[in-house]
Image (cartoon, rainbow, N blue to C red; front, top):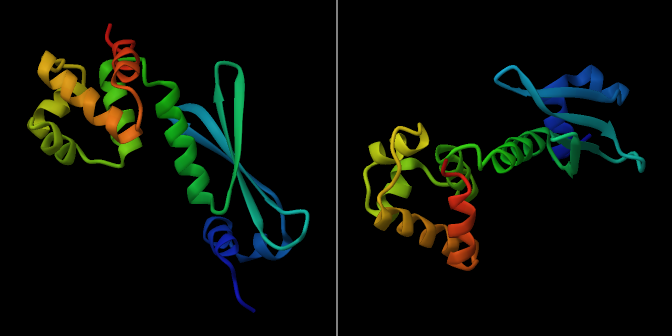
Length: 161
């Protein structure tokens, strides 16, 4: 019997007994002792594979999306948390950008010609970039997202307090 990617992910997370009984599972995902989402795992109605539904809680609403693996659902929940909280501070926005572009601090620093330490200080809200670096960051992100730089600048400015 061949095991597909969904079943392999499910077995890794919950074990062979749960997989053979097709018992639905519910995992809560927490960040700093706060429940930010959950992953609902259930056998699909066609009886062919497991479905991992990621649910993200934000401002009394919930967003849902089905995934092929538990890990994909978990990554999606983490990304949505970053997206929802990106305007909390400039540092939160930079973390969101890094995640969205799948970039490290070093790679981002290389692209906009600043040190990794500068980016670390932005992330930890110890400093803000000067105007040329702020614009370079906005240009890079706008280009990456294929959007207008003015839209990016407005969105970024909402994170500065």
